[in-house]
Length: 190
Image 1: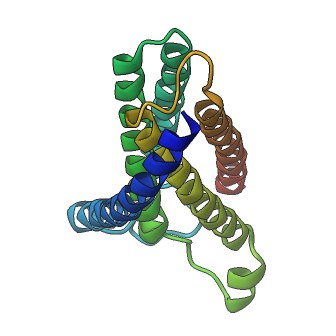
Image 2: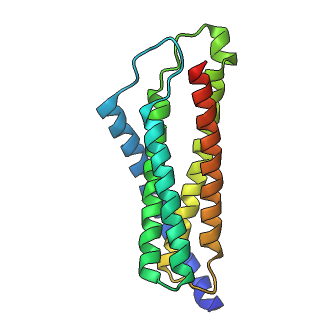
Image 3: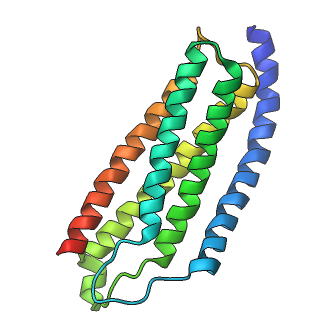
């Protein structure tokens, strides 16, 4: 098994590289399409939550559901539903990043003085959102790797650590996103 897995990893590395490029193109194309369809928010007096953040939160919840289903399926040795759930989780992650990227581009930060632009809550919230998005791209890459490994028969009822790691990473970022969203709402209310 170890010799087989060593050979499979070399093939997976090449597939991962190609899939990462395709994934990046799809995510960027999705964000650009959303930008072309919906444009930016109209300027306002204060920071407003873009609707894209509501949609991305729903995608985050869907992705959490799919990755938990995948964990359950792999532990019960149900490979076909496991792989389907991994693909759904990966699709949710890609859509999340596309929608989140569009939301950051489209956001109206409100009318500000130069001092407010540097020190205000709007700048802080946007910075946290961008940092979160960058971490989510890493989580999306982890999901991609685990999905490719799933199709290479890496996981089963005896070994599913990669799936558990990907799920944990996803859930931690989900909690962080809810915290950022809370700060966003607090800034919006004030």
